Amino acid sequence: MAIKPNINTTPVELRPEFQFAVSVDCVIFGYDEDALKVLLIECDLPAFRGQWSLLGDLLRPDEDLDAASYRVLRERTGLENVFLEQVHTFGRVGRHPAGRVVTTAYYSLVNVRDHQLRQMDNELHWHPVQEVSQMAFDHLEILGTCHQSLRKKVQEEPVIFNLMEDKFSLRELQAVYEAILDVKLDRRNFRKKLFSTGLLTDLGELEQNVPHRPGRLYSFHREEYARMRKKAFGGIDF
Amino acid sequence: MAIKPNINTTPVELRPEFQFAVSVDCVIFGYDEDALKVLLIECDLPAFRGQWSLLGDLLRPDEDLDAASYRVLRERTGLENVFLEQVHTFGRVGRHPAGRVVTTAYYSLVNVRDHQLRQMDNELHWHPVQEVSQMAFDHLEILGTCHQSLRKKVQEEPVIFNLMEDKFSLRELQAVYEAILDVKLDRRNFRKKLFSTGLLTDLGELEQNVPHRPGRLYSFHREEYARMRKKAFGGIDF
DNA sequence: GCAAAAGTGTTCACATTACACCCATGG
DNA sequence: CCATGGGTGTAATGTGAACACTTTTGC
Image 1: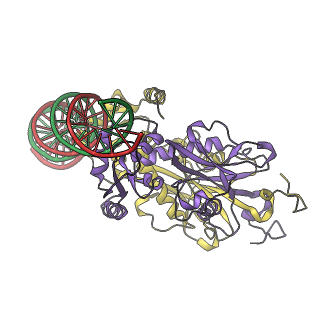
Image 2: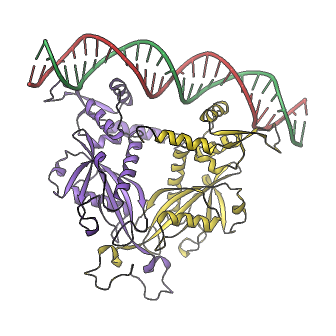
Image 3: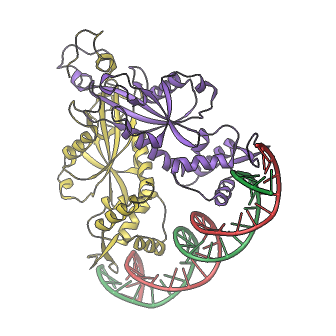
């Protein structure tokens, strides 16, 4: 959409002084080595030289906002069809040194061991979320907001399986919950609760190469979850 | 920030083709006449003539995003210091007929009987949320998203008191919960639960001019809520 | 045989639900 | 005196938390 020359006939939406850069920033969470991690890139702006930054990009003229976040994820990690959720939009005047940029934050949950991630750009690094204490821009605030949002979400919906491999033991699953929520959970109660959801398929297989008694392997029962959601939404409210 | 003439030296953030209009839209909820209502304005765009629209405005060059939503609220309703929460950002390419506009939706909870609201602009009207079936732009989707967000929120935090007058009876409070959640609640259990929160101050007064036995009046115990939050946040997690 | 984690039930406290009668007021 | 909602308690059920011992495997 071209900007018309005569400002008096230009809709206010299109006047240059009411135009802003819009970006998306992706907080890509993964779980590895007993910790919740986030995928970061070294910032190339002089103002933040040497600091870490979230993966983001400017919204393009003919691109839906959600599409931009999927694009960032695809371009930077090679992943498609990953869990991605919009969290919050940050629009403080001074948040970007190069000018006014309004950014919408998304978080994504990926399996760190995924094939495509392993061959990724080596400017990217996984950082333990707990140890990130400084970032470029307002990205530390964005990371904090997304981490809080994730903590709430995992207690409401089974999004955690997006962080797991296809087959996992209950110990691994519990460890991921514990890393995200930063709490210790009771093993027996955890097992009881997870089984009671009906969302675990017992694969009848055992862990391999563990230095202790191997646990059973499970997978996430997606079809059952789809049925549950359908039933819940078919009710009177919600 | 001026746009530099030479496009090759202009940071990509500042190039015109990467600039968008950004707006805020406020879903202003109120409770009146046994229904949850939303404050709407008649749309003045030809494309949506006669349809209703949320209260919104374009973000200004030197204005924080949150400040823009407070400004819309102040300018349109005269209210200050109201409850306002960001919910979601909508950025589909074709969502605005005049051009590309990315909008961030907020919802607000106000007391419909507030003095300043009564003398407001008569282009504004309160509509029962349940009866709104068509709106300009994608505002019906935005309203739906905010309504869902409110339903969730009232079950987690005592934001509902923003919709009430300073003094209210338990019947009134229950009716507001029922209107928002679209459920019937048991009166005895409701009373028990609300009292157990410790957030109600018994004013020792009775309702006036009700055609039945008057109920006691209560107010929201803000200080106690502040203490509760402080205590909860001082713990190990959150 | 030792270390490490798997697997398994019961008890208790607490929260949620369901449910019915008499009372105070206005009309 | 009638209609309307105010005010009250208890029993049943469900949910979450605490807690210990035996088993299986790798080393």
